Length: 227
Image 1 (cartoon, one colour):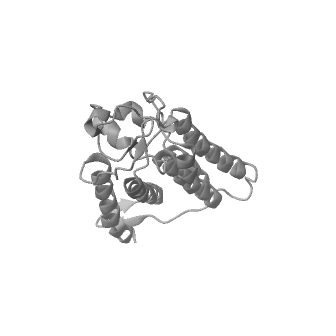
Image 2 (spheres, rainbow, N blue to C red; image 1 turned 180 degrees about the horizontal axis):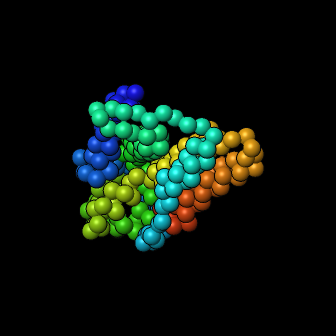
Image 3 (spheres, helix red, strand yellow; image 1 turned 60 degrees about the vertical axis):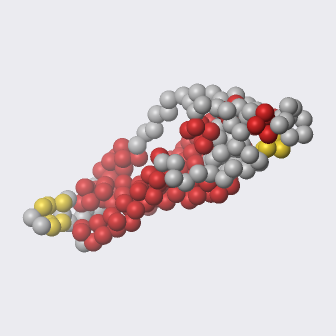
């Protein structure tokens, strides 16, 4: 049974590899959609991101697994001469499913972002379109379809074309739903107030993660809402 669970590793590995090519390479480029250089919704400044501290769900899992172990026990598993106790097996299963879900969510979001090519609110600040390349002197009536960005940071320019949907919002929403479902399964009926409190807390954290994307001008409100 222990090794049967690891038959899913190729699926997880393929998801991680696909995510690597989408996120960390230039093989797949976002669609170059048109924009107006006097669009106020694309003229917000690019603010350097603050350091974000992510608290791993493994700490919460360790706490909850200790609570659940007091009420239920699982037999240890011996495979190939190695003894795997139930705690390690549950931890690997919990983290593996969570990582796989995050990878799939990120993959779907990346595909949507590459397909839509929606510009971020700071697009004009990082793109710096050079109108002389298309023989236009003013932005009054110009709708730009060509790639005339004069910005030096190509990474920011590519990221500026991937606003819809917000990846941070999708990952935060998935984490909140996954952990909430886990709490609902692990916690006993005696914790009637603790269960909804934890679920509400993680939902609020996911909402706050989406709001920070709007406040820092990383995404439009509709991008966060759809994410």
